[in-house]
Image 1 (cartoon, rainbow, N blue to C red):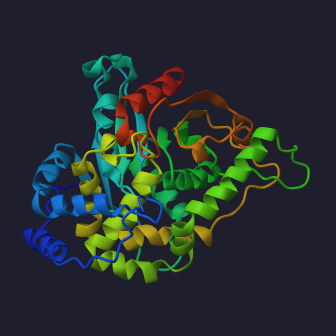
Image 2: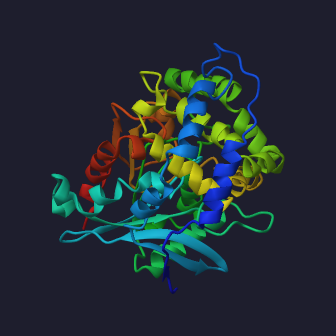
Length: 385
């Protein structure tokens, strides 16, 4: 494996075309008091689009991304983007951080220095990590899968190859969201590679609740009812991306306004800022970094399409299948992500850490990086050799 350095540079003609499209955006009829009930709030979206067109400085974001060690490598004929930062400390522990949807590697950037050099941020140098942040295929700067059937099991194999090629035959992991789907595959095929696994969103893989399983507790029944309600109220995006991703993808790939509306609604709904203002949780520049990465690389459809492939490749856990990897959970504030401990322990038999974040929703690594870094350090500290 021979990684090559990558300097992120979006062509100016791409940015000029983006500005033209934003200037000529066609707005739909709106209901004045809709709030966020019908989807993305019109007032917020207009403010965001105006700033994207006239105020946002992508080149500043680009410079920030390029302060990190970006690389690309070919794994089984597919180009993979990743960031690799060495830790500063006596014995850095290798860790892979995997992003979710609709997000990118950018979400993890402010977390990196807190993990690689904890002493510079009030921490113990003994808690240092060598950090690897890969971009899932189909996401910005990694290749887009070009054939039917590429699913998270293939990504898991690529992550193992990537880490081994970097000199890490065993490594820790922190992830959530679609990163959990990758990990659920890896844990069932290469669990011996994993020193420990920490997440802010437990519950994947789901336990087998068939004949012979223990009866559901009251907390589990309440959680499964909450899941049902969530799917009815929030799961439309998943149903569409799982069944007809390309019908959606044409519009999101052609219209930055449509892309922004589709993505930002999830950032709001899955953050639920107590003030009701998404900008109290994320800067406008951070939201637009995510949107511009998707837009400039044309990857929103290939990212969405992985939902289609997952639905056709998932293999449920067997009745006696368990995972013994050291497991750590620090749950986000999202109610749907607060899976009961007893539900998690049906699958994971080596639960070492269980806590809740006081703040931070689904995208907590970008929203509250200090809290996430502390949780990761606390979980992995006893696992260091």
